Length: 291
Image (cartoon, rainbow, N blue to C red; front, side, top):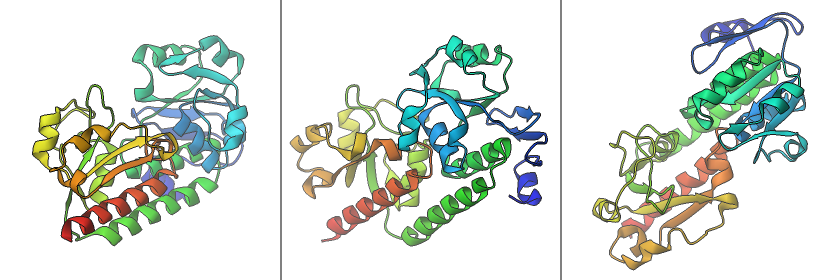
């Protein structure tokens, strides 16, 4: 990573054993006397990002469901959904804690900060922020691989944006939960992915990041494709309810799609693989409607 690139990100690069700094997603400056050697990573996507930049071996504690790559499965668990075992975190003797901001209540994050260890709050909210996150974490661990990983991610996103630019918008309903029925608001990163693919999130105007909607509202929106995500992309039957409405374009043209939740829902380099699949399925729905 060049010094110019670091400056653009408000980072300070240093030698392998010198002081390093980075600004986290809450705007706090994290300062380490030397690159982090013992990291507690409190989210599956953070763990995966650290492996992607060559720092996975420095992780001494992580959370439940941090299962990629395979080496991550051997890391001790110090947290699970919305909870952290503070005693286990302290016992791991970390010199850096990286925590998912919206993955834990503010009280948990404040408790982590009271341990006296620097806490980096990670909250990627857009596709670009995945690349930025890898660069900033790369500065804190002094791994030059971070720059290459970020550049590769940006290049693939740019290629998809170029490939699908200018195509007819396709009405997309993305179902994130069936009972109660929930979808994506326009500020969600997957709504951005839908736009990149030439799709139109039919509920993009809603303000909440994951709003509740009614079946009637979905039917009135006339989606041309209905999408959800499940582990490993295996359908669970969550979309079958829509088949009772055969006049809906998505049902009429058999455009009910299940993506891999472990890829599309994690802010990691692998996300772009599933975004590419999403783009291809949106394009297939476009073609089916044109026949």
